[in-house]
Length: 207
Image (cartoon, rainbow, N blue to C red; front, side):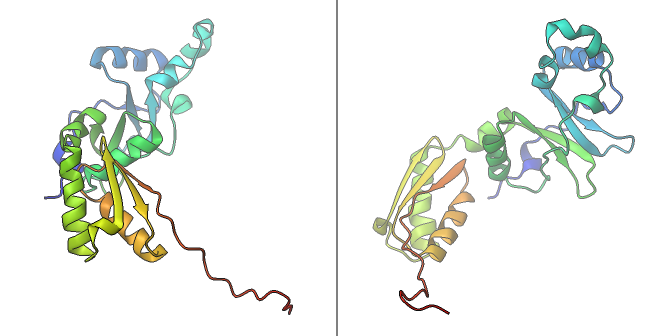
């Protein structure tokens, strides 16, 4: 069963508007014990994200400057977001690659509908590596692609899959993409040894 973002996201949303002041944002972070929040416009659409790191980037000696700043000045934009029907694997890979702790969840119109954090995803990624490996070998490599699992070397550590072997380029790409959708997979490292691309260059022949 595919677990999606809407299955794990929180609908208890702490967001700020573009004109929220530095002090208001700092107070909200302390009160709700969160590491950041989305910035929304007057219609409720996400236009950016302000993190605890953004606020801390202002040095202690810049209090006067901080007092004059608002969310619109500090936010990262455009915001990186996910949709409710995105897989948790997709959300996890985004957090993993972008080094962020939470992502706003928006609907097709860009309106904020929830927040998904690393802790929200932990349950869906809490799957033993051996179980992930077995599904890759039995259901994906042997089942879907009809290959001998012994021809593809696979290792799984903390949900990160490493692939090795010598498939052709098209098959290798398709296999890696299929494995990315296995439940519990955080990331896939493609270390296949692809054959060199054929060249139409003929030594000594010039046009």
